[in-house]
Each structure stands twice: as structure tokens, then as C-alpha cells.
Amino acid sequence: MSSRPDDLYDAIYQQTEKQHEQVLRLVKEMTAHPEAFSEQEKEKVNRMDIALQTATDILENLMTPDTQMTIVLRQGRIHVDLTKA
Image 1 (cartoon, one colour):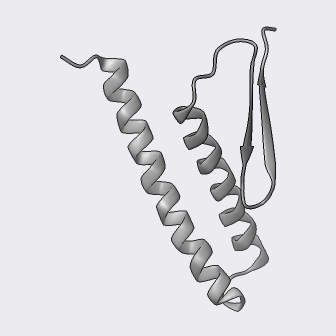
Image 2 (cartoon, one colour; image 1 turned 180 degrees about the vertical axis):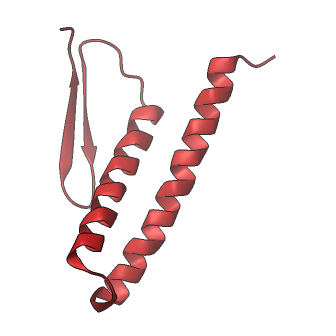
């Protein structure tokens, strides 16, 4: 018997992973043919890549209060510090 939160988590994780795969295909295409993309398009692809990789890493790792995580990306690092307000 699966719970609704587990089902929703799985659906969100799978969708995020699928979307990130699409973005990575664009990154590969953009690397091979940079002239085919405007600077605005390149920036959007970069932001999508960062956002989706970060979301995937957060979904994969337990984040409880007072935990920290450093996510290493192609573009650099993001530090997540989950402290109580």
C-alpha cells in the first residue's frame, strides 16, 4: 500500500528528472552549435539546468532543520543551509 505523499514524491522526482534530461540535451546541442542560440536562450537553458539539478539533489537528500548541503554543478556550487527561522 503506497501513501499519497510517496506517490506525489515519485511523480515529482520522475518529472524533474525527465525535464532535466531535456535540458541536458539542449546543453549538448548548444555546446555543439552555440551560434544557433541567442544569449537570452543560453541564459534560460543555464538557469533551467541549475534549477532542475538543484531540485533533484534536494529531493534525493534528507533535509531536516539545521542541516547543510553543498550541491556541485557544472556552473559552480550552491550551498543550502536549512536553519530554523
